[in-house]
Structures are given as C-alpha cells and as structure tokens.
Amino acid sequence: MNMTRTRPLPPLRDLCWGLAGALALWLGFPNDLLSLPPLVLLWPVALAVLGLRAPGRMAALRRGWLVSLAGGTAVLYWLTLPVHNVGGLPWLLAVPCALFIASCLASAGGLFSLAAYLLRARPPLTLALLLALLWYLLEACYALALGFPWLPLAGALAVWPQLIQAADTLGAYALGGCWLLAALLCLFSLPSATQRHFFPRRLAAGLGLAALLLGYGAWRLDAHPFQPAPTGPDSMAVLFVEGNVDQNRKWLPAFQRQTVELYLSLTRAGLAARTVADTGTGQGADKASDPDARPLIVWPETALPFFFETKPRLAVLVRDMALTAHSPLLFGAPGVERRPGQAEPAIFNRAFLLGPDGETVGYYDKEHLVPFGEYLPEWLNWGFLQALLQGVGVYETGTATAPLRHGNLALGMLICYEGIFPWLAQARVADGANILTDISNDGWFGNTPAARQHLYLTVLRALEQNRWILRGTNTGISVVVDPRGRVTARGGQFRAGTLWARAGLTTAPSPYHRLAPWLLPSAVLLFCALLAFGSRGAQISAFSGTSGKSKPGPSPSTPQN
Figure 1 (spheres, rainbow, N blue to C red):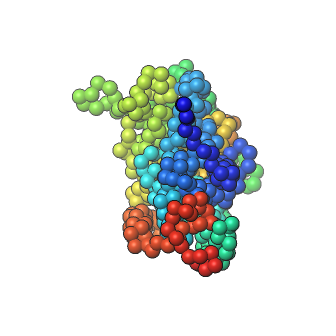
Figure 2 (tube, rainbow, N blue to C red):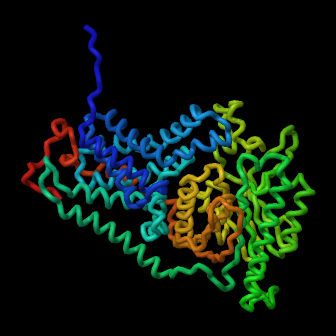
Figure 3 (cartoon, rainbow, N blue to C red):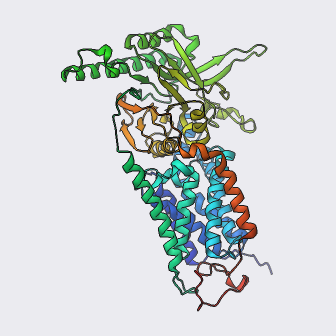
C-alpha cells in the first residue's frame, strides 16, 4: 500500500499570526492603500510568536520565511516594473526576479523565527533582549551582505518623525531593535490559556521603553523648532529641477539635445519666476547682494544621458547655463576615463559640480552600484539582461568620493539608493561634508510606492549624521530634509517643474557619528554574553505550542515577572 506523508497545516492561531505579520509589514511601509507606520512592529512580533509556537526548527524557519516573503513581496512588487518596462523581459521572467529579491530579504525573517524557537527556554526578559539584539544584527548584517536594506523597521517609522529621533544616537538599525524590545516586553506580559497570569512588570518595562523613545523624540523636536527656510551665513538657497524624462527614451541619442534643452528651459523658468516674485515684493532691487539670486541648481541623477566630457557642443550649453545664472550647478551624467593599457574606457555614474564661471569644480563617482541597473554580476551576465543597463554599458565602482566644495558648501554626495546605506553618509560627513545631497532617478518604478519608500529610507541619514539633506530627482520626490528628519520642502511627482527651497549647513557631528564604529561590535558582544551567561528558565508557554518538549518551569500559580 502506497502511503504519502503530508505535512500538517499549522493551527488556526498560527495562521492568524502569520497573516497579521504579513499585513503589518505591508501596511507599515508606504503602499498604495493605507500606511500605518507603528503597525510594522507587529511583523517581527508575529515572527517571534510563530517561532515560539513552531513544532520544530524547520517549521520555525519556514514560517518566518513565508510570512516575510508574503509581506515583503507586497511591499516590493514594484521591482517587477523596471525589469519588464525597461529591461523588456516578459512578465513570466520579471515576476520571478522580484520574488528572488524578496526571498533573499525574507530569509532574515526565517532566521529570526528560528532563533525564537531555539531560545524559547530563556526567561522572558533575556529572550526579549536576545531577540531585539538579533533583529538589529540581522538588519545591519543583511545591509552589508545583500546590499539592498529596504525593509528596516526604522524605514517605516520615519514617516512619523517623533518615532525616529533616537536614531541620532543609536542609528536606524539599533533604533528598530529598541522599538522591537518594547513590543516584545508588552507581548510577554499578556496572559493566555496556558499562562493565565498577567505580568505587570514586563508590561511596565515595555511601555516605559516606548514612552522613553517617544519622550526623547518630543524633546528633540521641541528643542529644534521646525524651520523650513533657515537664514544667515550657514544657510543656502537651492533650485531643484525635475525633467520628468521618460526612462524608456532618455538614452536614445536622438533625444540628447532635447533633454538638455528641457533642463535649460526649466532652469531659466525657475530663475525667472523667482526674480518676478522678488520684484513684486520689492526685494529685487539689488540681486547681486541677495543670496537667493545665486542658488545651488540641482539636476537629478543622469539628467544628461551622455558622456559630458566628450560632447563639447552639448556641454557648452550646460556650462553657459551656470555662467549666465552666476550659480553653481550640480547634475548627473555618465563619466568616462581612458586608462593606459586598457582598450575599453572606464564608465562611472557621476555627479558633476560646475562653478558660477561654468568650469568643473569637481565630480563624484557613485560608490555603491545597483545590481542589474548599473552592472551585472558575473554569474548573471546574460545577453537578455543587457537592456537594463540603459545603453551606457557597465558602470565601475567610483573612488572619487570626496565632498564637492564651492565657497562654504561641502556637498556629501549620494547617488540614488546610496542614500539608504548608513555607512556611506557616515563616510561623507567624516570627509567634511556639511550637507548631504542625494540625486536620484525613481522614474524606473512608475506610479508606485517605491519613491516614497526610498524617500523615508533616505530621511534616516539626516538624523544619523545631523545634516540637512537635499534630494533632487527626475520624476519626484524632490525634498529638503532637516537634521531632525522633517521634510521642510517637497516637490510633486510626474511633472516637469522646479522647486525653490532653503537648507542649513552644519558641521557638528551627531552622537551616532561618534558611536557608529562601536555599536555593532558592542551588540555582538552583548548578544554573545546573554547567550552564554543568561540564565535559563521556563519557556514562554503563553506562545509555545511545544510545552511538552521543553524543560519544566514553575507552576502556573507562580507568576514570574
């Protein structure tokens, strides 16, 4: 007789926890329907419960991975668009590409649930600390290893600035761990069918930590009043120009001059509109002494879709723009360098800064490249993926990363998704940047939540480094962010236009900037110490489905706070 073994379905309670975790991940991040940032904390809480209730190691790993995959795919569904719309791959191939990336990120959720299962015999306080530390370590290590840290808890919480103020000391990843610790302590205080006692000390500890984070946020925001237009010598005017150029045609040679003329005309219109407004208010009499008359003009990433150094007829038009406006001009374009002994030139995703005289002041080459969009991994260097490289070939990793300087400006450059990496902003400030500047092109992703997700992930760098952020984009969202993570000026989306704004220049480092080299090693040491020396006790039976296999603990009549 042929008998087929089937894996039993999880209990209904586990299915509910899994659904809640996936929905919380989706609803916590900006999406197409409704965003509730604090709800994102239910995601790791659900992963912990599923791990504690799992019947075995593989079940815990599988449950955590599946829940994170479901929620992560809902958050990151937009990854299919550039692969299909720009790369030209059919949906049958584009969808698996997005699922592959979501699967890699979801493996962290699986490991977290597995850890909850393996650590379930620890006392509640020790378990909560271990899981919170592990979450921090997973976020930081996955950012370093995978190079796509798109789902940190703080990235969702950043929509509400009061929730993320402690990032100025802890950093975004450790802050996520602190919020998770508060949620787990509250969770472990609740009674259940097998653990009928309520544990007020755990609840008080969880609520107290949450109140501390909220109180610190309120204090820091109150100490730094919202100032959308700072003035004085340590401030600057900026003019963002959004071309809203179609990603599918911007690299066609026939549209190169048209693209240049578009940005030139938009810039002239923006400058003229400001002049008319100032004249109408009686402020246009002495434009030479008006600092707003010479703003930093910001064009987005690859605004000029050609090699700027090798196209003199088009380049002279851009240089004349800076000269006519008497303003520094920052823009993105591919950079090219010929190297002795090499037949093929080196190509870079480059940001150029022109001075008011039209001459090149300096340039920055993108350091952290996007797989498939700017280079192809050797093991995936297949011909049908070449369309994603947008006609310029494979970019090389940049080494010209020093701040771009003009007058009192020291622009710490970040290009596109470099803004989501804490260590890159850390390096720019260490090199002397007094303002962070991110030029980007989110036109790849169409009218999806990708641009909003990208924005709030970048906002975290302002808090971590105590710097204003200028973010100029092709299709939106162009913004100015103050050092407390508040958006002080914001442009629209999917329309050609300009945005005038002001920003401040700061040189004081944040506590996080000083502590950053020590935070991750300290977390590793603390995690290992708790793992080695933390006392063992009764498992969290309120959430466990395997009490018959665990060590016996105190009787239900003896509350353990």
